[in-house]
Amino acid sequence: MSWLPTSVSGRIYTALLLLLAAAPWIILWADQPFLLDLLSRGLILAIATISLNLILGYGGMVSLGHAAFIGIGAYCVGIPAYYDIYNGWIHLLLTIVVSAAFALVTGTICLRTKGVYFIMITLAFSQMVYFTFVSLEEYGGDDGLVIYLRSDFPAFMTMDGPVALYYWIFGVLLLALLLVHRLVHARFGRVIVGSKFNDERMQSLGFNTYRYRLACYVISGVICGIAGMLLGNFTSFISPEMMSWIRSGELIFMVVMGGTGSLFGPLMGTGAFVFLEQYLPEFMKLLRESWLEYWHLPFGLLLVALVLFGKGGIHGMLTRLDARRGRTESD
Amino acid sequence: MDWNLLLTQFMNGLQLGLLLFLLASGLTLIFGIMDFINLSHGSFYMLGAYFCGSVVARGGSFLTGILVALVGAFIIGAIVEWVIARRLYREDHLDHVLVTFGLILIFDTLVHIIWGPAGMAIPLPDFLNGQITLGTLVLPIYRLVIILGGLLVAGILSIMVTRSRLGMLIRAGASNRTMVEALGVNIHRLFLVVFAIGAAMSAFAGMLIAPITEASIGMGNEIIIIAFVVVIVGGIGSIKGAFYAAIIIGLMDTLGRSYLDDLLKVFMSVHHAETAAPALSSMLVYILMAVVLAFRPQGLFPPAGAR
Image 1 (cartoon, chains in turn red, blue):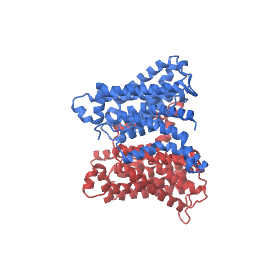
Image 2: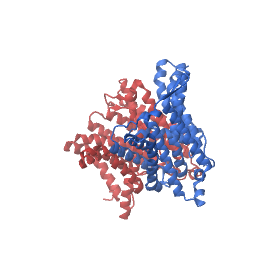
Image 3: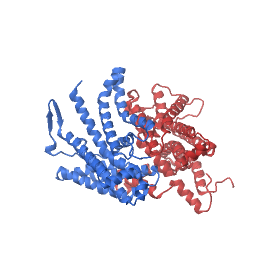
Image 4: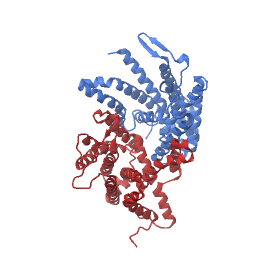
């Protein structure tokens, strides 16, 4: 069975994808519809973290404003829906055009800076988007918008019903993984990774790294915008809170927890994050009834421990497992 | 135009600017010297308010509260530096963001456990609680105290930084850390002291504002982002830059909130001006930062010899 991945991490990731593909049936069989909701939300966030990992993990561009794209995507569903336009193709086209335009304009400015300045300027732009939507009173302002119907894709897959929406999300997730995989293994990805480690050297090799990085930033923004479009459909309630800087910080947390610069790392990190967010409070409650509200304490301690001791995140741990078995990574 | 209102708003802007300076001066030193991004700097702001509040609630005087807040934050700051930050100076900025994000969660929850979820009001002593009248203008004494207190600390800090040996090392560290190390200075002790002083100043700011807003969980998490904007606009590692940027941003934010709608009404309809103004004034500081970063990334007043 030579087509089976040989490394532990490769096997785990293959099994995970197969499990995700079959998840709705398992969940319906076990009669736990809530789990499908949790899984759908997790996969949407995973699409967003996969897009963030493309610039952060491979390109070394630490954006503290990526949640802005989630908000843009969500409002590209919400605002047309407010005018009773439910055609999904319009939503999708709008999401792609607006997030690409936003990424192009802000990226042109942001990518002139490096390091901590990049972190701060991406934060600045996302805060501007945040306050713009807060001020749009027509579309609910601070209170947000309710989306009454899901995006409608005539003569294509429907989004109605939890299982149909789940497969939509799963499909987009697979496409995002495939796209990132193709990109980073192409010349494009080599330039991006090379520019992360030594930009001057890449430039003296004749690459206009600025353009490559800008293209990478735009692609990442569009993928994240589409995640936002799915999130708008999933939650059917959207508000500017989706793009506050805390949300962007959480996205970074998920990427790092999974392992930066690996294809499946963001998926694992997001899974761990969503799982902890859901079950840590319940675990605390088991210890003592009144501790339910204190779940942020072990969460914060975990975060500190992760940075101090857990280099490389979940993916890093798995590859270390591989190294111990004397096998090479194959992802 | 109502000149009294303008003057009051000006004082409010100055007050916000000085609070921002108290936060940003520590932040910019930690940033400039240790190259460490400390998101949890706002937690000391919160801790300062709660420390002072507990002392006052137990019948202690306001001045004892100030002292306890300063010393408490100094010690906790030193512990955080000793146990966590010290190991990460040479690591990626990403690690700093994550670890201090974790610290915010830890401090917020600890405050929740110790003091409960509700905020804590801090009553002012009588001698600070009055108002003084200047001509037609009525000013609360406490606002003046905040402004004078902020200016006093700014003055002490500037004398310390420009005249003392510690200040000399701090300035040297901000412009070239490696050189200071090579000259045989105990850099670890310098880092510890800078971190702890920064924490104490942050606590001082939180404690000053608490009698007006009351102490609450997460009170530092909003203002810390603005303090970061101040640091970037002023130039990382520059106390002088932090001071001017803090005053500019404090005034811009406060005056923007009260006068931008009038200004916009010149260009657009009253209705549109009234909806656009609040958002635009919240955005102003970020627009300023984006413009500074795009055209003068080293900030307005970068420290001498900074890269």
